[in-house]
Image 1 (cartoon, protein in one colour):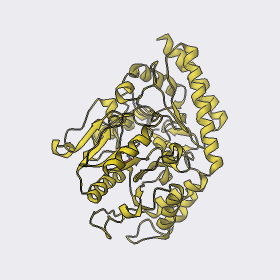
Image 2: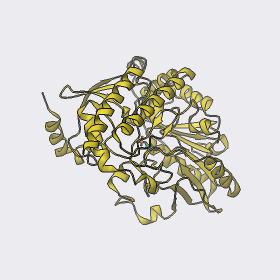
Image 3: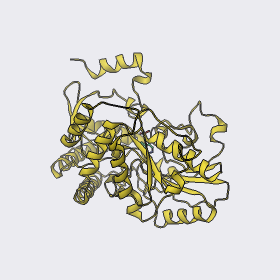
Image 4: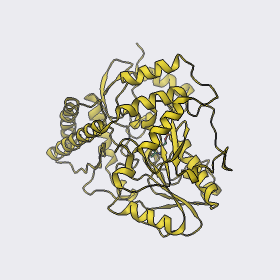
Length: 420
Ligand SMILES: *Cc1c(COP(=O)(O)O)cnc(C)c1O
């Protein structure tokens, strides 16, 4: 048997930091990452045969749970017909129809291969369409690793305390204006777009305050800037039509990822036809991709969306509520200050006494306590994200029994952490 330690040593020899996405290296919590061998529903098993109840769920990409039979068979069937063509397919048409049907502000949508590509392309489109240069983003909101957006992002960057990356030039972010979340800026007519996570889920979980999204919508309209919702996490998760349905505020452009690929590589951005038609080949804004609209990804994504009917959203919400209530009680019983924000089926874990509303607030979470709780949970067979600024992703595979099991282990873990 190859152990996690051995594999990690081998990985470090040929992969920077031993991982293909920094958070996976466990730097924020210490220790050696577990190497996954297989996964099913709410469970993952590592190469040593250890079983974990999984709350990572590919950071939300597998909302139906790991290896869901309907999604696996959709991928298998698609794969036998070829894996990529360089020509359009019916699968792309059907998933585009489904996305537009669920999100009324999206009349046309283009498929890409990741959330990062979606936000990068949406911003280019917004600039090209408006003929303006400035971009406004919110501190602690993460929009992937595109240069212009790597200014005060959350997630792994929060963990590493890097305000931006080396290698991103000052010129690239010179037109990016970073402001605090939950505060409405005064814009001017140089602003092409305002981009945000309508519910911020990469600095812990911070819901928008009452009226914030509508006020932002109004301010964008006042100066003719486009409002871009990055719904890479919230899309098709917090409601059938995403955060814009949940909060009743429409975006001009919306970015998707994670859920819509059913665990395969996909991203998408869409909006009003009049804006989307600025894209090549109809318009002057170039954007392209060899694997865009990949037939395996569209098959997996459609199978995932097929599972997400109204009853599924009821179950997702109920499960997340059960988890949030259980965790709140576990920490209260242990005498540890905690705030457990919840947005529909998304659950946050803020180790502090006050609900955060900005990135600065989010950074008051007790990262050392998170590190200890993380390992106390991992030792008890519960996998959470290895970073204090990620959220929990209970999904359709997390039945009440699974959630109660997680909560029982969390009670023990919290008690252990309280003992110091
Ligand atoms: C994950 C994420 C992205 C980036 O998506 P990738 O597929 O990792 O490139 C963008 N925005 C948000 C809100 C995300 O959570």
